[in-house]
Structure formats: C-alpha cells, structure tokens
Image (cartoon, rainbow over the protein chains, first blue to last red):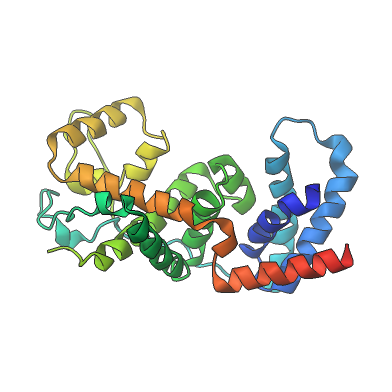
Length: 177
Length: 88
C-alpha cells in the first residue's frame, strides 16, 4: 500500500524538522490529506517521492515554527583535524590502512554497529542528511527538497557527517599513529 | 574555518583533497577540479586510502538499513506503525 511504503521515510523527514514524535505524526497525516487533495495538480515534473517529501517538508516547517524549533547553524570543521597536516597541507599523520579490513563480514558488522551508535552523536543537520542519503538511500534531490536546503549545503553536511563517522571507525581500528 | 581557494593551475594538497571527496563521489566537482583531484590521487601515497575509507564508511551506513536507525527512531517508528495499523 502506498501509505505504508512511504510512511517511515515521511516520518523521518518530518522528524528532521519537528522534535516531537506526536507532532511529526500529525504532520504526516496532514501531508497525506494534502497529497489526496493535490494529486490532480501533481504534474510529474518531479518524481512522486520528491513531490511527497516536499509536501511533508512544507507542513513540517510550518509545524516547526509553531514548535519554536532552533537548529544551530552548521559548524564548519575540517574533514580531518589540522594537526594531521603540515603547513603546506601534506599529511604528517597519514590515515593508517583499514578500508580493506571492513570487507570482512564480521568486521563490517561490528563497525556498522559502531557507526550506527555514532550517527546519533552527529549534529542534527549532519545526522539528518547522512541518515536520509546513506542509510535511507534517498537521492540528493530528495534530501534537498525534504530538508529545504541547497545542493551545496547538503554536500557540506554530508561530507562533515561522513568524515566524522570515518574518524570513529579509524579510532576503532586503533587510530592514527 | 577552512577555506578552499584552489588556483586553476595549482596542485591540490592532501588537506584540500580530503575536503573534496564527497563532492567527487557525488560527481559535483567541476571538470578541471575533478582532474586535479584525480591527478592528486595518482600521485599521493596516502589519499587513495582516505578515499577508500570514506567509501567504506558509506558502504557501512548503507548496510545498516533503515530498520535499525537509532533505538529512539526505531521505537518511534514501530510505535507509529502500530498505531497507524490499528487506526488504519
């Protein structure tokens, strides 16, 4: 059923804007009403999912302003700490190899658990973008529509979030030497 | 605050390259910058491993699956599904 298929993703989208689950649930319900009313106006200029997420986003943004939500301006931190480079920007503490090791199924399962835990510690916007893109598998276009952010902003948040998670895995493997 | 000002002719430093990996994987780098990035990967002994690690991180994220998101989100979704089904 259509509603079931999209319900979880719509909730994720709504929860990126509003804090309360109850409010998010209302937003999704409200969005479905909007979908049913607006289906005649859906012109296939975007995919159905993109259109759907845009409707959820619009409702969620209105709900969030009522909820008096505040999201911190994105932090701008380097992907890798400055102390790992010399003044010319060359590695002084290069990454120790581990990428091959996560091809092992057991290692991958353990690291996936660690990444899942670390995901919750990311700043909200980074967590939202990484979750929707890399875990839920939404396209960048869908994520931008859902979160009402620009492509460039989305990529910055995505890269910050992924970089931090890479750092978490690195420290699991014993960190840099 | 980091700032990536890369002159057209300049070679990339590792510190700049690591900031471009997601843009590279997204296919979002302008052609000239993409070429510089790829040239850097060919020359650098360490940055290919960095790129491989970021790819591995993305693969791990994909392997988690939406069902396991966070205990909180997961419970919220289960609760909502139950209520949704009961109501529906």
